[in-house]
Amino acid sequence: MTYDKIMNSFKEVWYLNIISVDNQFITVGSILIGLFCLILGILISRRVVKKILFFATDKFKLDKSSAYLLELVMFYVALLLVILFALKIANIPITVFTLLGGALAIGVGFGSQSIVNNFLSGIVIILERPIKVGDFINDDNIIHEVESIGLRSTKLKTFGNQHIFIPNSKIIESKLTNFTYKNNVVRTGVNFSVSYDTEIKKIDDIVTGALAEHGRILPSPSVKVLFTDFGPSSLNFRVEFSLKIKNVDDKRFVESDVRYMIFNLLKDHEITIPFPQRDLNIKSELLRSSLEE
Image (cartoon, rainbow, N blue to C red; front, side, top):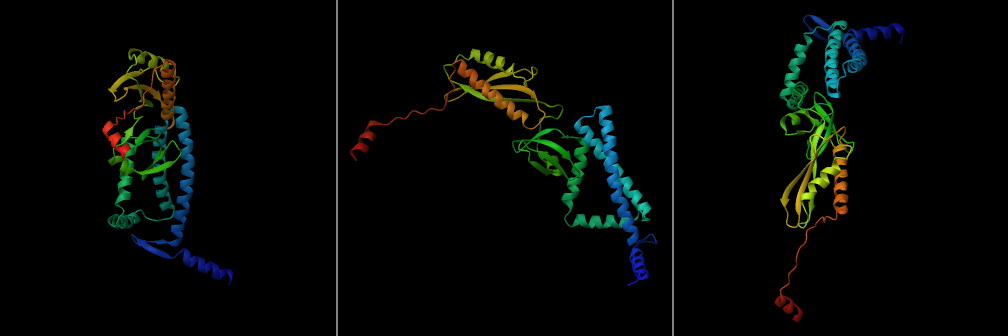
């Protein structure tokens, strides 16, 4: 096959008409040019957005959540401009989206409602901000850190460094506890029990004094010791305290430290930590009949 034949075959494919929009033919070549410009534009946009974000974060001292929101908005604005530029370079009219919109509507009718639902929920989350990047939320009694919020799903990280992707619609529709909605100060506590013969007046002073020396526990809101209940074999207390959390492990580790401290405190002050006990009563007649058998 000669060079001229190869070039002629290439030109035939390159100028092959795919579809006509507004009396203007869209060829294979124009589609390839558009795809090349689109990919190149996306790569350049990512680098430019990163540079702008780095400057804005350093200049205006943005927090993690605000920086992520700014990055998301800038990227999608840049993506829209890149798409329009690629269409212009490829000489593809914008009215081609009329056809694509009709195809998308058909796709929605055939089962893509969940995708659209998650997409719209993602926009609501980004604008309304019930959760933000860096927040700590409780889902199924497990604390997760919000790592990113996309337009389809939200990525969470557990204390075991596992990543969970939750559809945005679930976040909108479900009941979630956001520990750090306004700030990263969390109010938590641990339960403990003492025996009935304990002089309970000194429990408050012993526990609050010890926890005040813990480096992670905040002085305000202050530590509170609550007498919660009369148990079957114990007097039940709960100590509540506040701390700042920076990652998903902080809350668990500080609660563990407090349990260690309380155990050692009660032991040092010779205060008994009770455990459930049961009395076993055996009737003499039943015992006698069992022995005779």
